[in-house]
Amino acid sequence: MNHLETLQLFNEKAETLNQYKRFMASLPGRKIEFKHSPETLGKSQVTVEGPDYESIAACVLTIRFFYQDNEAVSFRNMKAVYDELATSQENKNDFNQIRNELNNYLDSDSPFVKPATNANPEWILASDMNETFTELFNVSLDSGNKLTKREILEWFLYGEYAHANKDKKEKLKQLLSSSVSAVFANYIFTGILIQIMRCIFAVAAINQDVISEMEG
Image 1 (cartoon, rainbow, N blue to C red):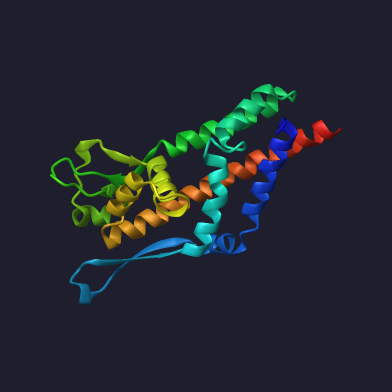
Image 2 (cartoon, rainbow, N blue to C red):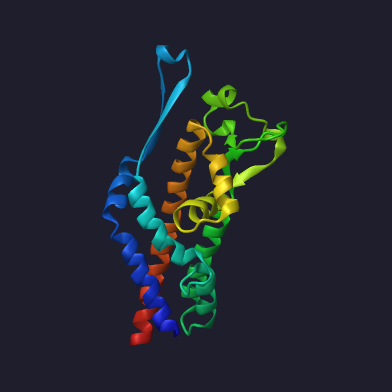
């Protein structure tokens, strides 16, 4: 596959993502809510609205093309393409900026932290997700052992939707072990997908300029 074909394939897959109307239509109403009621004795019920399992699964199967390095259009492989392209330095810089921003985002901390004192710790939400729930989650923030967004992405991607990696599947199972953490983990995961998609669409716009140059 030559560079032009790679750029065209990237944009074809980006357009496939854009066609997932059910996923896209759910995004404006995406939210997470805490509800208190006397019946629950002061405890809170957590509810979430957003994409359903079926629409997420379809989206993930396309997003993996941009993440897995055995695919020509992964962000890492696309960097090699842009390094060799006879296009403007501005286009190259714009691509690298988007890629770097995505990597920095994925390597940043999620709101999940593992307590320092627990023989068999579970991932629970850090108090900075919502101060109301500091006591509920009983977090030890001194552990410094936070879960990154990349880890969450890969646990869902390779432990649930796209593959059946035993280690990642077990880690995801632990992350989803409580109803509260499961709700938040799924909400955070869809947020990660949205951010990846934004970067994909931004790169597709740069690609289109380069394709136009290459096709004359």
